[in-house]
Length: 288
Image 1 (cartoon, one colour):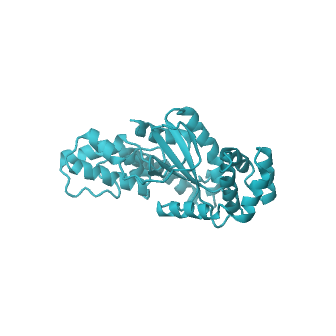
Image 2 (cartoon, helix red, strand yellow; image 1 turned 90 degrees about the vertical axis):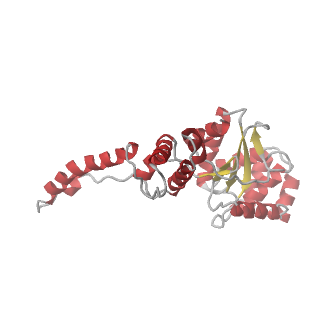
Image 3 (tube, helix red, strand yellow; image 1 turned 120 degrees about the vertical axis):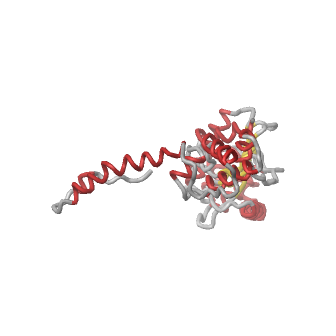
């Protein structure tokens, strides 16, 4: 969304106002027309059509006009290329469509190839999980307990699980950021709770008040959820889970994680906003 300047701010005593208003009357409809042209335009910004014949180019265009961009913008690929030419995700998807169409594939195959990428294999043994154990869609979240955006994503993750109770499972990986002073100890506390079978209970407590993750608060949460607090305290004081937290963070970095929260859906990095309205499209595609 772009900030709009109120018309009254354009008035002055030089006569510039009328010229600006005149420009707006004609320029804004022209801009809208240009942006609407994504449905018919044959040359998209940043798309290399070299070597594609007429029918193959048409196939690629058809795929990009009906398939959604994976960046989470809610637009089709062709639409995103026209309206947001700086988007690297739609550029990558367009390149995949051109490659598939150039190989002579039919439209149905090009549409599938457009979203295809090599998934990474994320080790999940022993990782906290909730959802259906035999789910067809696996979501892995790399997260920071002191990150406000991670706290916001808790609700969306629960909405996804509620909508797909048999088809989705979610794994949680530790990725404390250096700029969050209490994120590291919170990650260690979460794994200590996991060691007692109550990871998600502590997870919910921590994210409910993520701005204060002092050891005192963590110990209070441990008591509230029924942990063996003596054992819990001992593991925090000895930093028993420090190496595991570091291992998961390094693992995430190797998979291209640089910010939190970062999600992988069936091994493929999800680039959009993690909201049910947008993630559902990706999940439905995976289920097909």
